[in-house]
Length: 274
Image (cartoon, rainbow, N blue to C red; front, side, top):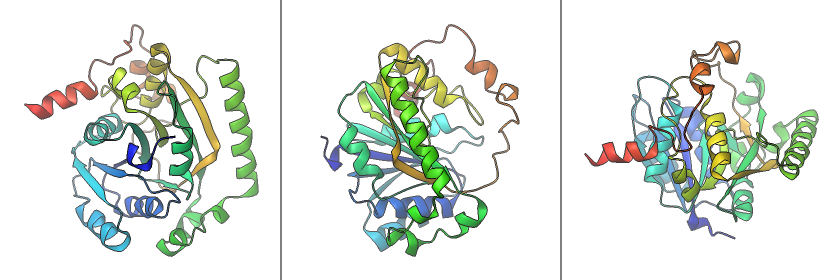
C-alpha cells in the first residue's frame, strides 16, 4: 500500500471560492490526510486568500498552480495540476466535489496496480442540502447524513455493476468521471494526460478512458466506498441539452485519435520551460 506522502490530490477550480473552501475543508477532515494538495487554479481571481485561510485554520498544506484559461477548459487545468504534483499517485477532484472522510484512505488502499485507474462515486445534492454544508458539519464528520437512502442504494447498485463490468472486461466500463478519480502518475504521463483540444463542458473524461484502455489500463470501481457530495450549482453555460449537440461531441467522436493526445501534459510542460 502506498503511503500518504505518495499521493497528490489535485483540485481543479475556477473562480468558485466557496466550493473550493468546502472541498479543502473536506480534505483537512480526512481520516488519512494526503501528503500533497495541489490547487490548479484557472480563475481570473486568485485563490490565494482561500488557501491562506485553510492553511491557517486547519494546517493543511497546499500548493497553488495558476493557469488562467478565459474559457472553461478542465483538461488544461488538470494537466497544470499534474505537472506540479510530486506524488506517485494522483487523485483528481473538482472544486464542487466534497469528499467524505474516507475518500483519500480508500484510494490509497486500492492504489496498487499502476495500470489501474480508480473511480469513486458521487451523490448530487439539491440546493437545500447544499445549503446545509457548513465548515462545522464537515469538521464533525456529519456529511453522510445528507445522503438519502435511495441514493446510497443506487451507489451500491452502480458499484456492483462496475465490478461486473471489470470481470467481463467490458470495453468501456467502469468509466472515468474526472470529478473524482485516481491514477498512477506514470499511467497519466503515458497517455500524455488530458487532451487540451476539449474546450467547454464534457468529453475529456471519456477520451482519457479510451486512450488508457488502448494503452493497456483498466478501471476499478470505488463507487460505493469512496463517495463525494456534488455541491449543487447551475449547469455550466457550455453544457448542452443533449451530449451530441455539444461543441466537444464531434471532436470526441472523431476517428484516428492517438493513445498519446497531440496537445496534453508534455506540451504544457514544454511551454512552461520556454
